Length: 292
Image (tube, rainbow, N blue to C red; front, top):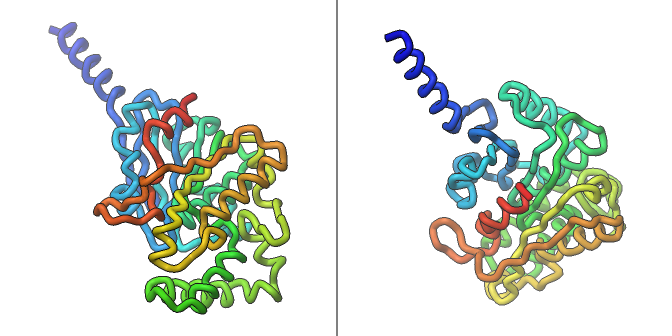
């Protein structure tokens, strides 16, 4: 009888070892894969939260069954990070990794829209400071990495006055940036110090260490869509900023930087056409990129 009990207990223990574990904490949701090979850390778009990420990022489905743990953050409303915020994010994420004994050398970071800015800045910070949490790769999805250019694009949207949603967003961006950073023509050094990349001055401080890891930039230009929707030209799109950042990394000697430019994947979870979406990421390609 004792042997039977021990045998059943052993089966139960093995069963638990093969199940994913989910934990929800303050500002995060973690799903630990059985026999985890890597952890994917994701940041949301500016107004978004974890629920939105889970609804829109279809590639998350069953990632744990591929041996990939996921850590979804709700640190949002950030187009850039101060040094204090970088340190706070680093400490918070390290505590989560320590608690669950996750491998700090098998980390991939990614984000959508402004969450991509956060991902790039945090990854560069971790590498620059030689933190124990060492990203192997980072990606950004249709992110406005050049915050100065984001400001000028918003100004152009107001001048064009052709799309009510673009006008409201433009007003918000201009007010936010002028309040927090000032006008770029008067405070360009501030923009350079905080943004992932500044094309006008070729400021590379916040991307320099990314040259040593894998980087991916997802965007779908969808020129006809943007021309009809808001009147924007290619140089006004996040796609253009990401393309230029990719070129800047190549100029630094990066061997593993790539642009992923899907065709007609720009649809939201509700089926509406919009190339500004988590859905630009194709699941199988992402898995291969993480595990290879």
